[in-house]
Amino acid sequence: MMKDAFLVAADAALRTLFSPARASRPCPTVGAASPTAMTLSADDRAMAAGLMRVNHVGEVCAQALYTSQALGARVFTDNAALARHMEAAGLEESDHLAWTRERLRALNTRPSLLNPVWYAGAFALGLLASRMGERVSLGFVVETERQVEAHLASHLDRLPAGDTESLAVVAHMREDEARHAREALQAGAAELPLPAKLAMKAAAKVMTTVAHRI
Image (tube, rainbow, N blue to C red; front, side, top):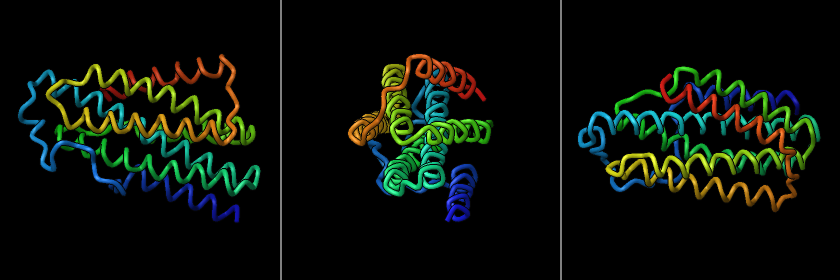
């Protein structure tokens, strides 16, 4: 059973980093064929590309976090219900991964070159949180999703008004993240201590600053 859990986690990592993401829900854009790359100015296109690269990195990290916490729930506490909760949330986050990757292609830009690094770091954090028990693991989800929701809200203000496709994607992602936080709270999440929240915020700041360009 433990071996199977690790194999599933390894497969999830490989699929996230090296396989095209497939969404189970349609991308919430205003049209199937986006003219964004052609109609935006060079400056606006560069801004949109950087912000959507950051958002794609966030979804790479989300896959790592939910995969590692599902693994931890099975290995550390033998909590199949919690593992299923994490896996279900991760499946929805995979839609975000596909949507943000689609926007990067439409904007004629690439994902972050450091995605394997971001994934490894997020996986380690998720595994550590799960090692501390169910309520802390869920609390980590709540705080992560709250910070992501705030981050996406800032992107709604910074994305070019003409990039309606990216704006639609980010708005829908923000709704999903808020719901994931509510669901984790309802499942019994513990409130994380302030130092942990600040450390998470500082780590996210480093990641978003670097991923915007690299």
